Image 1 (cartoon, rainbow, N blue to C red):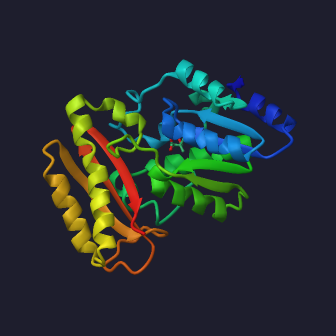
Image 2: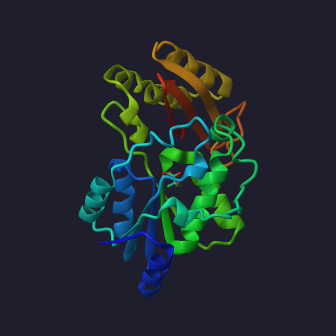
Image 3: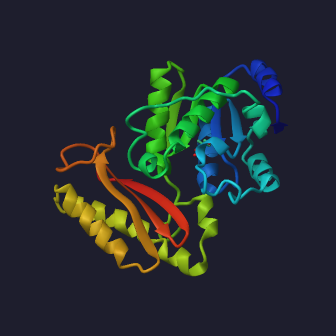
Length: 277
Ligand code: PAF
């Protein structure tokens, strides 16, 4: 596995690769969720490139940019075990040299849910992913279903800007109590870790209500909120029952629907989602 730190070296290596290239962009501190993306790429593509870059553009002031967990040596070892071909680890000055002033702004779908709670977040995500796509020039790129809104935004960007990259979506990897794997789970105390399973319970409740024939979205949202409110360490940021393609909130469930939520567990904000099909 080659470790590459500059854009120039990444481009030179890329030119030498003749075959399908699968790309997994990450912010590092890899867990089984990331490794599922790498494994899927390994099974589908001839070459697998993984990037590790904690992108400052997608963190608002006051968010956890400096505290964001990092362990590059462990990440490299895990990627070696997964047989990744190249790991690209650029620096901030490499990605955003002095004078950098171009942004990718996907409209509408970025304004709700995560976009409403974290203004500017998706502008940072779309910008860095567009840059990484231009540097790596993959055939396919892999993203986790856990960040469902991010997936929709990346797909929109790829279509709108004719990037010609296939976006593959990999199912969320969960702990035994249903908690979705996330680097931020590290922040949870043992008590908070126990409480965090409430996200999965609320999503499971939504799915059960739908399976029982409930079609009124407010009923489902309210019951999810009521369940979360019973957990003393949890505070709802948002609960959504929305059109799975546009993320428009629904009144009546009459199409493919995604339940999603963001919940504060103490000082840690966790997100998750589940299809109601
Ligand atoms: O999902 C993430 O880890 C990040 O948003 C991404 C796609 C690597 C861009 O920084």
